[in-house]
Length: 267
Image 1 (cartoon, one colour):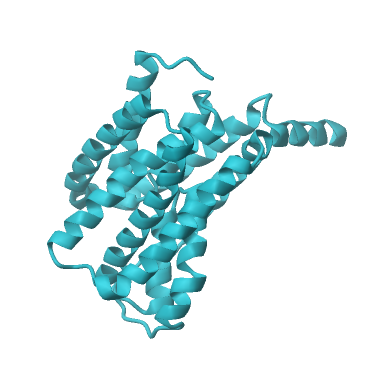
Image 2: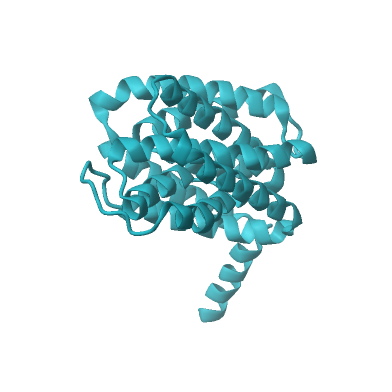
């Protein structure tokens, strides 16, 4: 276990501040915080659990804000939220049983895949689409699957929910944003409940990062109108890819070792 000192906590809090700002403008703040936790030497399970606390803080806050304005359809949303919660909890339980070496090998690959999604995904618009599946099918086949991904990894899950609500349920952009925040908060809480009970969360670090991420989100919301995601989104993708390469370059990473061996064999 890495020694947790004040310098490390402040450094990671600054990272969370920047990630919160990025997330408010373009989404995907977890693409920054999670790999930095890994690079800092935090154990994979503790890194995912600690990152989940600050992510849950942000999504619950956003959901509460929408709820206060009466923008969430609770009758439709609650069944989806319950299944999303269960999916998040199942994903978090699965992480506990995955060997450390498997996590080390898979996480850089997941980071690159999610970065590619952010790079090439279409920009959401207000166009109303016809629903492609029923609400019941979405509840049992989509919400828990995305929730499971959130529990076992997490970055980009809000965008996945947003896209699913628009393309599969035919919701317009604002309605999809509200629904996705509710489902994101639900799976975050499902995963967080498992991580908290297992003792995997590094609480001093989690609290510092959550506070910093909240502050960064407030700053990002103010910058969103002026700068927008045009600059931030490509930067987010680049940072994610660089950090994935950094993780692969770690001598302890089994996938990085395998790729290095293949490269030398090829030469």
